[in-house]
Length: 451
Image (tube, rainbow, N blue to C red; front, top):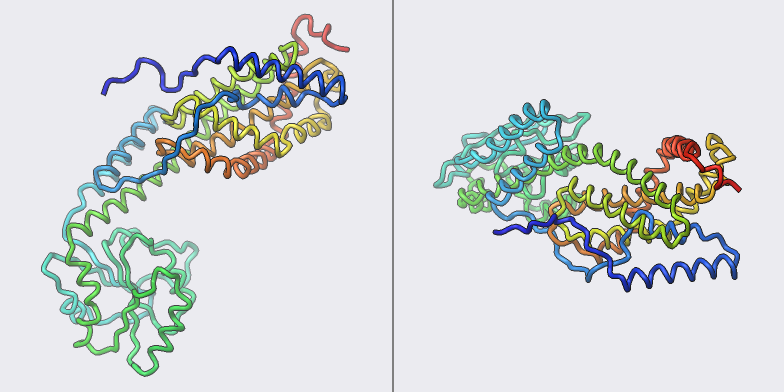
């Protein structure tokens, strides 16, 4: 397919009519607020900070569809491998890349026979293996694993890797149900075919016991409890649902490879996200002070709109590249706009302004310099919007066309979490702000701005 020569994240030019309308509206609004109502107008300029996205296109929707085949998952995993290459240190990447590729090859090369594990907690007596083998016999090759080794006490309730990799599991459950067994059952992945086997020889009391057991188990185990009466000859009939499943050997092995590839992909995405967050910090810090400088240098708040829009357009573009987003530039701008509006609605600007005024390390003389408070509040808004934008990109990784209607519902929570996270680092921001203010005060002719 022929690729366009233009960057997928290049930003279109602004329509002049829309620019004029927005600038005129802001100027008129500022005059009305300042001269008629006598309210501060700093937030009018800050409205654009962190977004630069008041022009947008019609939202488009598409739900994330995970791969439905082994080849699809392999392709996704290889895409992640290429993303590691662009983010990791070259020396460290060589070692990590070999290890990751070995893990991928291990799953890809997984073939027959299919595997079935009968497991239980330590000390539980499992049925005789010879009787079970005879009862479960199927035409295709089958490898059985027999182990009552799950610990009764452990710091990490995590299914062992050798059990997780099985095509199917039968969990031998002693009655009455114990808390330890319930904890282990909850750790078995829902997409791993599994059954529960119990030994209850009293047919007359089974209905009551079954109802009691079902009421305590998660819904996924309904109709997947196999009651054995302890008689070896009856086990074959008991295991008929399992045999029907095992008769689809090729399909089962294929589904297991998909499940393992999905898990490997998730693990890699988690590592990749940590790398992205580290690199995002420098983008966030640089962008917030570029915004502060643009707002500080602008003679009137309405002019801030264009300068801040340009700076944040660059921030969004860098973030899009960092998260490997192939979204349209106007879509990314609409996302930032929604997040900025949510941030303003939650009072991020007002909160940052009050906190800055109360921060003793910022020298009092600098606060009379025109635009300083406005600039720092704009920087903090950019910081919060950038953080919430990063969270949104992480959530939508792998989505071709995100649902903007869903974003409108998520925006408030995304911004709230981002603001809480940034409040934890507030002292760091204030220290950076102090350095920025001193730098601005050291510039020639700045004293002319002091009232």
